[in-house]
Length: 337
Image (cartoon, rainbow, N blue to C red; front, side, top):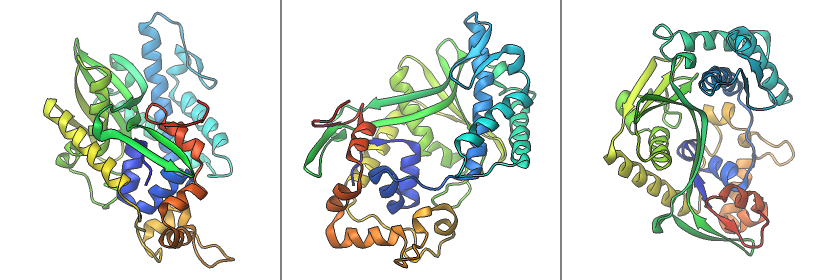
C-alpha cells in the first residue's frame, strides 16, 4: 500500500483494520462521523480557548483572536458555559447531515469541560498553566534512507520521504528547558484495536505518545519532555517520562510501521462477514449495498484479489490528494503544489 505519512490516527486505523486503512489513507474515502468524537472535539476546542487566553495575556494582548470562530474578550473566555455553547453551535453546523447534536449533548460537553478544568483544584486548567503553545501542528520529514519511497500510481510517480503529522493539544513549560506535552481524551482508556484497557506500561509503548515525543524532540531539540495523557472520564492523568533512548525506540517503531504498510499488498478485513461489532457500528464501508448485496469492503476485497492492489489504487484513489497529503513527504511529478 502507499504510505507517504504517518499520524497516530492512521497507525491506529492500520492496527484496527487494514482494509479500513486502505479506504481512508490510500483511497481517501471518508468514514462515517462518530458523535462521541464530535463531542470530544467540542471539549478540546473549548479548552483550547482557555489556553489561547493565557497565551494572549502573556503577549500583552487584550482578547483572543485565532480564526473566524474566536474573537473574544478575556471576560467572555472565562464564561465556560458561553464558550462551550459557542463551540457546540459551530460543530453542530459543520457536522449537519452527519450527526444530530441535541440539548443533552450540550450538557455533556459542558460537564466534561468543567470536569477537565476542576481536576486537582484546577491543576490542568490551561489558565493556570504556563502555556507555550496550543494545538501545535507538526509535519516533519524523516530524511533517512529507510524513510525514502518511490511509488508509481496510474503512470505517475510519487516520491519523497516519510513524514509524521499530528497536533498536540497543549505544550506547557515546566521549567526553563522542560516541557509538558498534554493530550486530552474524553473517551475510554482503551486500545481500540484490542479492546483492552491501557495500563501505564502500555502508555509508555503507545504509538501516539512516542510519535509526539519524536516530533517535539525534532521541533525543540534543546528541551526535555514528559507526556501527560488526561483521560477526563476514564481515570484522570497518566504521566509518561521519555528520555533519549525512547527517541530511538520511537524511530524504530515508525520504521516498522512504514515498512509494514508499504509491504502490504492484500489488506485484511477485520471481519469478512462483518459480524464483528466494530464493523456493524463503527464503519460505513461494511454497510450492505441493496443492489449488489455486498458491502464496499467486500467489493474492494474482491477487486484486490482479482486485479491487485496497484491497479485498484490507480483506478479509485485521488492521486492529487495523495500527493497533497504527502507534501513535506512526497511530490507527484507534474502536479501543482
